[in-house]
Structures are given as C-alpha cells and as structure tokens.
Length: 349
Ligand code: PMV
Image 1 (cartoon, rainbow, N blue to C red):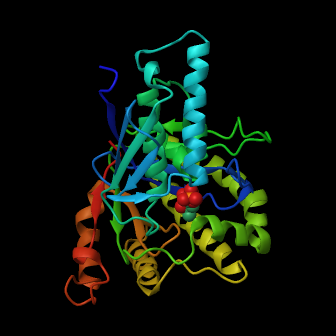
Image 2: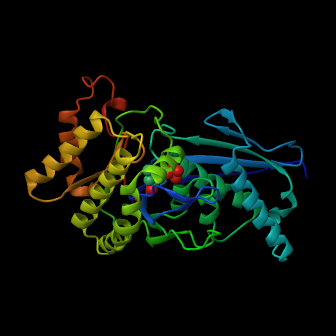
C-alpha cells in the first residue's frame, strides 16, 4: 500500500587522505583551495551504515546518529536532502521516472551508525555524508554523479563515493560544478597495500575541521603557499606513485604531506594541535624502523586528530605490528590505545 515505508540500507567506507584537503574557497558550496587524494578503505573495516525510510505517514524529516536524534536543520544536511530531491524532480520532469518516484515528496527518517569513534579525526563525516547521499539517491531513484552532492555534506565525503584511489579535483568554476571526485585506480589495483589504524585517543577532537580550516585560511601564509605551490606538483607525483605502485614514493609523499598539513595547523593563529605525544612517538618509531632497514617500509598520516593511519605492504605487517606492540604494550599505556592497539588492519578490496 502507499503507507508501507520504502526502506533502503547502505554502507560507505572511510577514506584516508594522503594529499590533504585543508581550506575552503567557498564555505557554502564547500569548494577547496587545493585538490586532494585519498585511499578508500574496504567496506568491512571502518564504515558508516545508513538506513533511510520514506513513508506517506511521516510528518517531517528526522535523523538519528548512533542512536541519538540530531538536528535535521543542520545546513549541510539540508544541502544534501535538497540536492537529491532536486535531482529526483529533474528525473521525473525529464520523463525518466523510476519506480520510487511516487514517494518523492515524502518525508524521510534517517538512521546512521559508525563502527568507529565519531569525530575523533577518523573521517567519520566523510563516510557519514557519502553514505547518506548514496542511500538517499537509492530511495529517490537518482543515479549518476553524486560526489558533488556528498561534497556539500562534508568536503572529504566526495572521495568516499568511490573505492580505491580517489582524487578530489578542486575545480575552477565558482558554482562548483567541476569540483568532483574521480577514481584514479580501483580497489583491486594494489592488492598487497595494507592500512593499519592506531588509535591514540578516541576522544572528540578539540577543533573541528570547519572552524580549523577557516582560521587557517585567514591566518596561515604557509597554507597559502602549500595550496598554490606545493600541492599541484604533489598531486601529479602521487598519482604517478599510485599508478606505478611505487611504495617508496607513495610513502614519502604521504608522510611529507601529513607533516605539512600539521605544520599549517601550527602556523595557524592561534595554533591548532591535532597531534599528541603518542602521535609524535609513532612518527619517531616509523622513521627509526625505516632507517633500521635503510628503506621506506612504513608510512604514517594523521588527519584532524591524534590517531595514526599507517600504510605498508602485506609482507611487513606482522613484524611492524610486533614492533608497535613492543613500544606500546596493551596494559601499561594507561589506556591510551583502545584494546591495546590496531583497531583494524585493512585492505582496499
Ligand atoms: O571534510 P572535512 O571537513 O571532514 O575535512 C577533512 C580534512 C582532513 O581530514 C584533515 C583532510 C582530508 O583531506 O580528509
């Protein structure tokens, strides 16, 4: 019957930037000051699961995040809902009406859960908005390019719309139509690449990415230099490293870009600190480990939080995990690491 709710559930994985996005040129449309590149984790690892229901009997749009009802009037959420409904209307007017279009004007109830700490700098908003947009699109029968809508939820979310290695091209247009994510290589491209997440703290981050970026754009001349003169060349080099599966080049660019991002945070006034003592110990450990072997076997990267994301090849995982467990023993670190250590060792496919 018409009262039966239409229900769709989807999952979206987290993505980890190896060339970082930091700074917007347009706040409303979420247009970045530089392009970025990320690796999307496999669906079984860190992910968001979202269920969207529509029913004629729903009085209003509502959303629950990790079981708690949140404010549906959140502007970014409203952008995503509005854009998906706009595309659905456009499809109907173009005569491409799908089966789901009867429920188009209906209100939605959205339920979203993460299987990892929210807002601890583990790209929760990326997986969250990617999943929301994808699930809404399924419900309303919308197809095609959706990364431009996910971008309007959270910038980094546009990259979680694709698997594998993904670039977010900053675009040139003022209306943002060319600021989209694009797959560089699929998830099957580099089968022995592994990703280890070391949780240094599951607390919510001190400074959110939105306000952090604003302050950085306003005050950091290092950020301006980075966006104009560093990232464009690094994007070219990173794409080359990914395409040729050159781990050394990939790893070194990843670490340098993470370090420069955190340097721009320190160059922001007042400064922003996302790394903590554990993060710095992990950085030192990685460099000591690589120096010991005389080659770059392991790379770290940190987003807007203290948790390390480690890249390495499959053949080095066992040993490196042992080294980490030696220096960060599960029971003596004062509970800084969740359950002692790696939250997950992920592959891409
Ligand atoms: O998309 P946001 O607002 O969550 O910003 C993400 C910023 C970083 O995670 C620090 C870098 C990135 O490119 O993901």
